[in-house]
Length: 210
Image 1: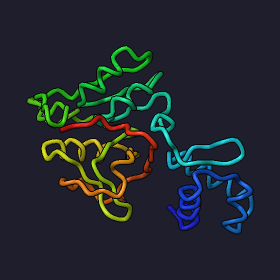
Image 2 (image 1 turned 180 degrees about the vertical axis):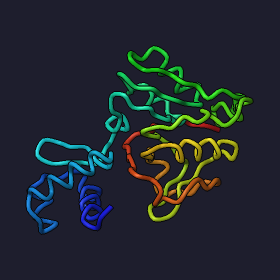
Image 3 (image 1 turned 90 degrees about the horizontal axis):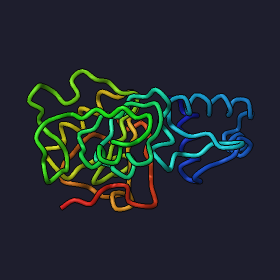
Image 4 (image 1 turned 45 degrees about the vertical axis):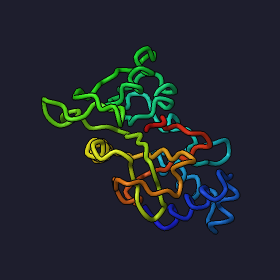
């Protein structure tokens, strides 16, 4: 990603959204150049287009496209918003329950032993979780997120599964609930720079755990 793309995303992060004209003035380039940048970044799922401009996504479902294969973390509220012509692979029973009657969604479960602490199916007997499946998008949760620092979790047993989903997806979207922002959890997951898009929410999308 180029320097101008990084500046454009920083402007959107600071403002929540902006018009093409405003971005062109701030970046010192033409509106034609800004529109080309927005198309490229939208294609990469780094932002969402709005009438006359763009914004950073506030709902992970905004990043999902028809035909996608999606890895989904233990985010049942996100699961409930997914619809239409996609395949969702998850180890979360709560997410699976939210999806099992969703129209147009093919549901894939990882298999394994149910872990009460994390709410996930872990350690499948037949091999790595989801086998060789790769995804267009991974929608991941976290216990803590520090920009420029690290993404962290709360459950050591679930870390390998999280990394498996992140590593096998073309785009990694991290859902950061208010209670996770600026917080450091006990389990390191990855450097923050390895996340492609951060979806900051005003409400908690993460199911509380003990």
